[in-house]
Length: 429
Image (cartoon, rainbow, N blue to C red; front, side):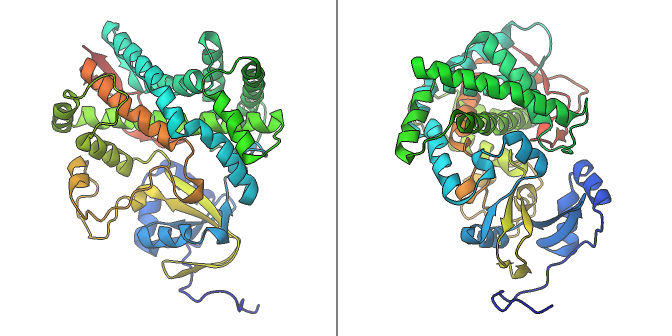
C-alpha cells in the first residue's frame, strides 16, 4: 500500500494491540484509571479498540491544542447509542453549516440576555431547596435533589413547563439518560429499548411545548423563534423538537453532575468549606449583579478539574493529523480524555491528585481546563451551568449547614456523568 503523499510526517501511532476490544471495553467501564494507565504505558496519544470500535485516546495541552486548531480536518462523532437517542436531526449529529446554523438557534436560549432573565427564577428554586432541606427530618439524597433542581431549571425556567408536566418529563428523561452510553441493541426490556420508548414520549411532550409556545410564549422559547429568524432556517417541528431534546441534555446532565460533585467535595473537605464560607457569607443574596468571587471560582475550577462533567469528547478525522507529533490517519475516532489531561500540567506539579482549590489562585499553575469540552462544539449548556452552580453555592451554603451521613459510598459512578454512588446522603440544619 503506497503512503499518502499529502499526509504529514510524524511518529507512528502506538496501539494496545486489542483485536476484538471486548476486554478493553470491560476495563473501560469498570476501571477509573483505564485511560491513565494506558497513557503511562503508550504515551499521550494511543489507539485501542472497544467492542470493535477503534478509538484514539489523547491527553495533554499539545495534543488537544493540535486537535482543536485543525477543526476543518475533523467532524463531530458520537457512539451509536448516543446518535440514535439524540436523533439524526439533532445538531449533535450534524457537521459543517448545518451544525453551525442549528447551534446558533439553540444558543439563543443560553445567551447573556437569556441568563439575566432566568436568574431570579433560579434563585427562587435555590431558596425552595434550602427550605425543603431545613424542614426534612430524615437524611436526604442530595444527588437526587441536585438532579431535580437542574432539570427544573431547564424545564420550567427555560421551557416554561409547570407541575405534573415537569415530573412526567423528568421520569422519562432519567430513563433516556441512563442508556445514552449503553449497548445499542433494542431487545425488549433492555435499557436501550426502554430509552427509545422514553424518547418517543419525550418528543411528543416537546411537540406540545412548541404548540403552546406559539400561542403563549413561556420561559425562553420566544428567544428560540428569534434565533430561527436570525439563522434563516425553515426548521420543521420534527427538527425543532430534536434540538429541544439536546437542549434538555445540554442544560441538565452536566449541571447536575457538577453540582453533586461540588457539594461532595466541600463536605469531604471541611477546611475548604470553611475557607469558602468566609467569602460566601459576605455576598448579597439574591443578587443579579456580577460580584467577584475568587474563592468560589477556584473551588468550582478544582472540582471540574478532578471530575469534569464531560469526561471526554469525540472527533473523527477526515484527513491525517499530527497530534503532539503522532500521525493519526484519516477516518479515526479521537477521544479527548479530559480527566487524565487535568492531572498533568506544563510545570510538572506533583500534587494534581489532591483537591486543592487554592492552586487556581496561583499565577502560571500550568493547567489548561476544558470542563465542558472545547472548540466549536463546546457544551451548549456551559453558560447556564456556570450560572446555576454559582447561584446554588451562594444561596444554599448561606442558608443551610449540611453534614454527611456516615458509612456511605462517596466514590463516583462515571456514566453518563460523575455522581456519588450512594446519592450523597446528608442531614441539614
